[in-house]
View 1 (cartoon, rainbow, N blue to C red):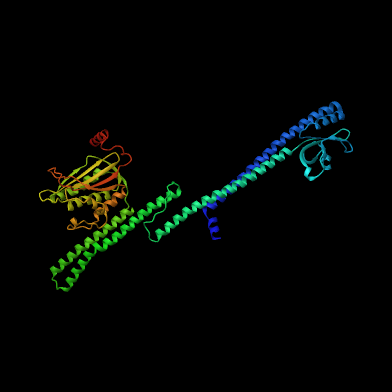
View 2 (cartoon, rainbow, N blue to C red):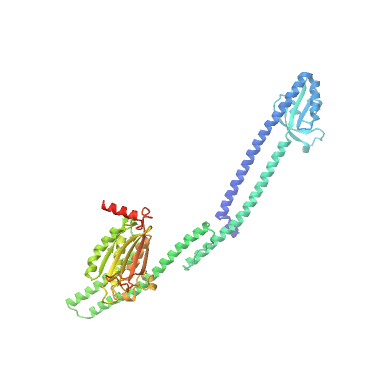
Length: 498
């Protein structure tokens, strides 16, 4: 009973019932429409045939009287057809005809109008099984003679019976076929839904690596399962990121908090003078600011990844952002003894948020200033910012001539709180590249970390360095018009000049 109730409550069963009911009602309507119109058409033809017979008999009666009429009817009776004839005398006795029995009530109505009657054909006993349907006209002639002319409706009755049988057969076949189709489709749909439900329960129980089955036939269940699998991939990634963040926070923030606690406990145990107390508070304030900056960076990354920063993506000239940011960092690099160069020959237009893109570029430059130092003492540190474009993308790269990042660490270094051993000596929280990656992902772009040739003045390529490349899609209006198109380059320069 439970299984039956479950099947009857499915959407597939309800849809099948609705379709079956609709097709049944439509079939019945078509049968009634066809049957009625066919019946009317055949009745009109029968009436025309009867009227034609009456016209012929009337001519014979006019020429030869009642005797000529009787002779004409007898001749027609001997011809095998569906026409009916009957002549009665003034006493109601049959003179000639091919009708054995007709109700007295019908014979009494001799006004010549069309009548649908039941009769018994000549030569058959008067029983219900032998009764037939006919359409007749009855006239009263001079001398109280009566003339009946009609036509048997057996063909119409037979046709209507055939239509009824066809409708019955059609309805039975349709119900059986619908039942078979529903059975197999319902089993298939229920099986797919049960698989989806089972996989969902496994995932809800904590198996985030589980995925919904995709059969590969491209139906709506496959499309649903594929979209849900993409969502589950994203959820798993976020949960993994949350776990890593929790672990990293517990690991990386425990040290400064412990150091702060130790400093405060040491200060409480000692009798500090005003100067020493102030220095202790200043050191604690610095540690506190670093912790606040770390949490602010985490919050900003979370907002960017969730798309809740309120960022308004609008058409931007990327070269203006690059020039503005590099203008701010160029004096800083010079004071730090770093050769800083900028190349923005391309003028790509992208859909983006100016503040977030400027923050991402600033983080790349700061990373290069902090960690992009050459390992050899006689090599001057150098940073090169290059903006280029192709037919589909804008490419913003920041290169340095430092030690670079090993290929095995390039993907890991973009995670939160990941700091390589070579960068432990410099201040930082390991969140810079995570923020950059989140911003680039929000702009439907890609962050690429590769080795770079030396960018120092000597032109030596002994140093590998790091090339951090941000790849962003161009606006639709600029696609296919990359810097490789000379005509486009000339038009851009002309517009800039004008």
